[in-house]
Image 1 (cartoon, rainbow, N blue to C red):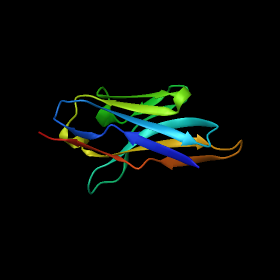
Image 2: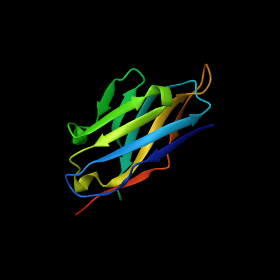
Image 3: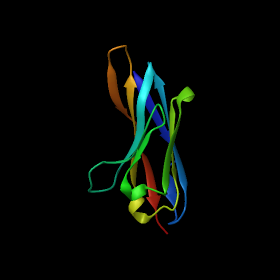
Image 4: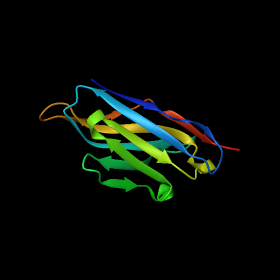
Length: 120
C-alpha cells in the first residue's frame, strides 16, 4: 500500500505565497511522476502541475510564472511553491503520484487534499 500525505494549505491574502508538500510512503519501487491537481467548488478537478522523476515539468497555463513544482526523489516528496496567489486559486489541492509498486505494476494514488483559500 502507498500513502500520500499533504501539508501546507491554509488561508492567504491575494498576492501572498504558500508552499504545499506531499510525501509518499509505503511499498514503492519508484515514482515516475508526481503532481498537483485542484478542485474548486462546482468545478471539475484540473491539473495544476506535474513533474517526472527526471525533472521534466508541465504546468497549467493559469499558473505559469506563479507556481513552481519540484521534487525530492530521495524522500519521495513533491512540492508546490505558489506565489502571487489570486482568489481564483482557491480550491482543494490534491497530490497525485504514479507509483511503480512491482516490476510490472504501476498505480495511481491520491492524497487526501488540502484546502487553499485566497481571500482578503
